[in-house]
Structures are given as structure tokens and as C-alpha cells.
Length: 199
Picture (cartoon, rainbow, N blue to C red):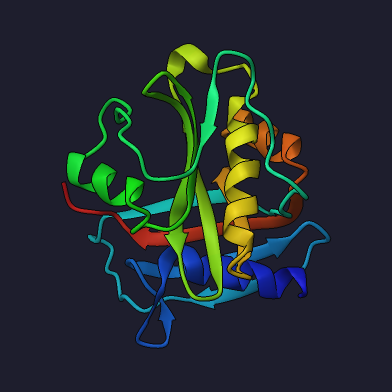
């Protein structure tokens, strides 16, 4: 697929489609490839000067699944099947139960006993594509764990034949390093003007 076409698919995976344009309160977005080609992606809400708005910019990559599941580092176990695990701090209990049951798509975690220390999951999942969401507990950051769970997630999701995306806010350099460690292929940049969620 062409990088602009892939960025368009990623935008639709992240924000969905509503009324002929991007959803989730998107006014418009731009997709820019690393070779400088740009496309305007329509949203649908109308705004006024008083409308609270937010602008975001995210770098985007496409993931290629590894030939085999990566190995866990010593002292940790790589898991991806239903079992009783303690949720990371701040996780909604009902959402955690659905995730572990596989109802939110495939996931992979590195665990220390029953404590999840790094997790990759389907942050967004459609029939055509999936975007990874990754989270590593503060005490375990800087050890390369995120790239292990992202590669494991990619291997598990690839069985469904979906396009696999990784994106991170433009200023999240730690996440950019995870993408590089995973061997992800850079696609470009998605910039979005959207209606700010009400508190």
C-alpha cells in the first residue's frame, strides 16, 4: 500500500468514520508522508470561534510481525492468554476483565509473578487494521520491555491479516525509540484539529 493510503487507513482506525468524514470530533486532519506528500482528511463537525479545540500531531509507523514470539528477559514471563493477573495502577476493573478475556483483541504482557509490568494491547481494532497501545510500569521503564510486548502483540494480531500500526505523539521520543527497536517502518505524520472533549 502507498504510505498516504496507509496514513488514511490509520486515521480511520484511530478516529473512525462518521457522516462521510473522520469521527471522534475531528474537524480535519492532515496526513504527511516522510517524502513530503500531504493529503487533507475531512472530518465533519462545524466549529465557531468559541468552540474548544485541540490540535495533536503524531508520528506513525507500520509494524511487521516477527517470525516468532520474542523471549522474556530473566525473571519475567511473557503471557498472552487468559489468566488472573493484577491490573496496572489506574486500570478500570471492568475494562481489565474484558481485556484479559480477549474481548478487546489480542494482547501480550510481561509479568513479574502476577503483576503486569509491561503490556501491549489493541488500542484500536477494526476489520482492516489494529493499532497497538503500550504501557510499562514506571519502575520497569528503560529496560527495553515495551519493544518485547509490542513485537509479541504484532505476532499475535498478524494472524488476523490486519494492517498493524504504531503511533505516538510527536514529542514522545521514548515511544519513538520503542518503534525503532521494533523495526517499525516510518509512515509519516498525522496532524488533527478536533473538538476538545468537555471535562
